[in-house]
Image (cartoon, rainbow, N blue to C red; front, top):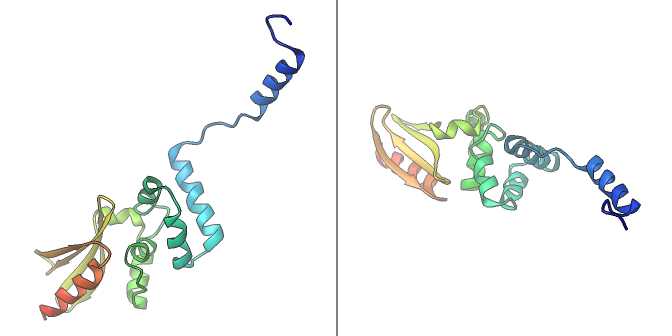
Length: 153
């Protein structure tokens, strides 16, 4: 055997070079993951939530606040509630990436419920339009935020 290896070794090296794929950048990987979820689930938010649960936590957390999902899909993932049609439409029209700044979920009399995601956790803020009155965090934040706003009426 010479220093170049056997003929079979060289053929295998050449085959490996031809089949080696270019590395996928992180944003493309996020997009591909979201596309796979939508191919399996279409618009079924229950299926989407279950698919998100199966992802590695860091990937899931990124998708939940990305342009690849809408705010409704993220809302359902965190709260497991299907809100009324108006709220659904409002959230569907906003990308999940808008949740960093907050998305208006609903108005209860003079009070606004704003949905944000902070450090991977859902937050509902209750505001009077000018002043932040209270915030609620976690899986029951929406229910607690609604109850609080209704108690102010």
